[in-house]
Amino acid sequence: MNIQAMLKQAQALQAKVAKVQEELKAREMIGTSGGGKVKVTMTGAHEVTAISIDPEVVNPEEVDLLEDLIVAAMNDARGKINKMIEEEMGRATGGMGLPPGLF
Image (cartoon, rainbow, N blue to C red; front, side, top):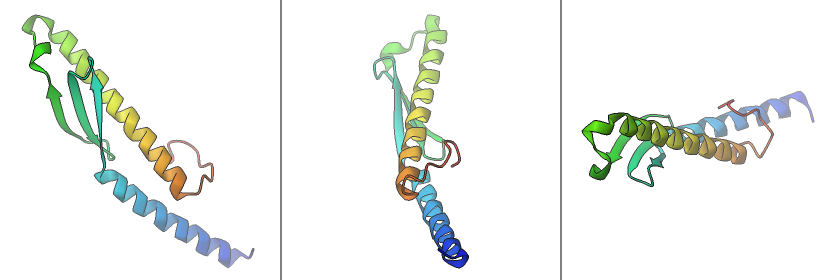
């Protein structure tokens, strides 16, 4: 394979990856904790767009528990987003074995 063909292939891959990245930014995942009583919706750009809290877990004397549940739900959403990004980038790059976290 000549250098120009390799460059064209690299440019096509770069364009494909950029398109997938833009599409992923618009997708959302929901992270949960407390058996689904706390939910956090996060985009592929890691932006939180919504938090839902079941009134059952709102107790003024246990604010620290609620805070922990929110953190857990956010971490769950982030983990799902990261997994989705890795899977989609793997598909976009044809499983080229790019290092995790590159995108």
